[in-house]
Image (tube, rainbow, N blue to C red; front, side, top):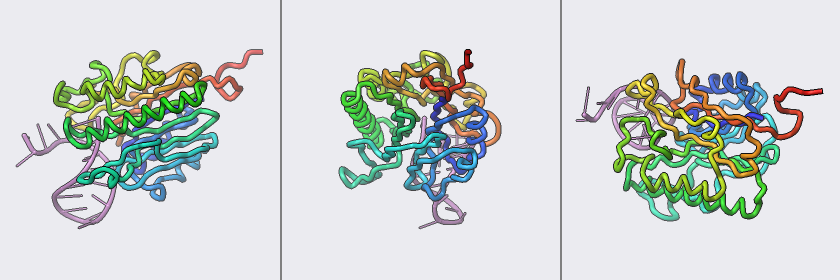
Length: 278
DNA sequence: ATGACATCCATAGGATGA
């Protein structure tokens, strides 16, 4: 089984490109972020014609997360417990939840498509929101694994954190000034390790970015960032047989500024692509 | 460089992005 995550930066602007890649790569489940539309605006037919069911959570032109899956999805939720909201100029409980989290169960795998808040600038209210959002998500991961220690849980998406210095290849990032690389953001990300969720891609693909800004020839110069991750519980990590970052999807006509990140899982059935031995 | 590039919406300039 092949599971991927991709910040598509508008599903309407590149639905054909997304589905072409899914068919070419034999993707079973894709977690999308930044779909930038409401469910009724989603190009559902393109995905359904290719054999995918959809779970969509979008509230406006901003944010938005979705799953496309060949297998049925159950237990669909559009937030995690105590997820904070945000609205510029508003405070406390007046801040509505944004469309940044979607949880589904597929083949007994618990999967999340996550679009972590950007943070905008150190000291900005959006930065505090980002840290609070990650803290609440981590608390949910802890609670899930305490209740179900053998659960195959994956939290995947655009984390908007470059955990290591080598993940921050964009020269506009300045230590002490920029979001994505600040110690509190990195600590919030690393806390998921302590919670039992590890990066299942990095051990297999140690190098490479997942995002390059559209501006300033960042992609040709390879001045990008590694901010899209698949974090898995021990039971999920045990299933992983391979992983890849699909850098070629940043090329060509009208690409997203992010590329897909993919894991291969061995679920033990005969529905995988291992050679049959008689 | 108040930029650059791309997406969306009250289709023109603003908000957002990382």
